[in-house]
Image (tube, rainbow, N blue to C red; front, side):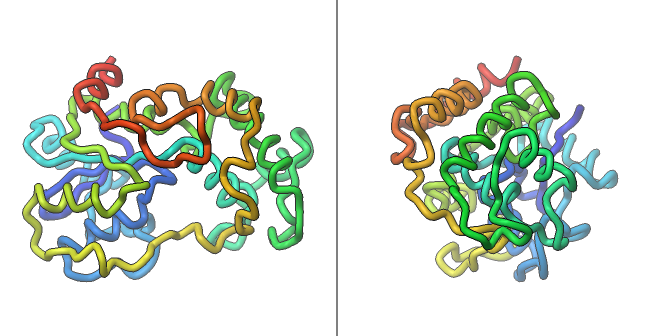
Length: 272
């Protein structure tokens, strides 16, 4: 299986396991800048040079060697499950993607037909009941995660712990896991631990939220989207994320973690 979703700087200063919807565009650009002194012109996910990526055959032996040796600083980034699934809905389901089309072709028409969701019309700009539509999407997401029907769970709403675990199972070990909600603090910990050709001033880093303009703006506070049933579904899907990454399953309004991440616990529970 190797190390899917893993990126490494060309200088081999640091390894990063990508978790979708967890600041991956910003992290990728910061790593790119730390090697080259400039940002990649475009979406960092499209970069074919300037970063080693597991998806590139020539990078695989280098990433494998560095990860299994465990002498290159390795990290990942996680996010509150409530805000992550909500972000996935607005970006991937309601939004028009960079290619000008809906995400995954017939996915949204299928959701409209089978789950009765609304996405704000052809361009996502019409008014619609965001709360009702999101809760119906949540039923679909649960069906994919729990029963893999009507499709396997998409990477954008499959559990963060599942992404994080592949790095551990195949012989890697994390030196740090940072929270999206405390991004600068966590990313500074990473930068302080490694030597890079170009220093990074996190306060001067532009926003690289590639999904920001894809879909309609969220019209309500996070907690308004989650009633008792919705909270139950989220906990059913993301119990391990809440437990390992120390988020509060009982309060969708509290996006911040409630305790420190225990790296030994993460490796013990994800290494099976």
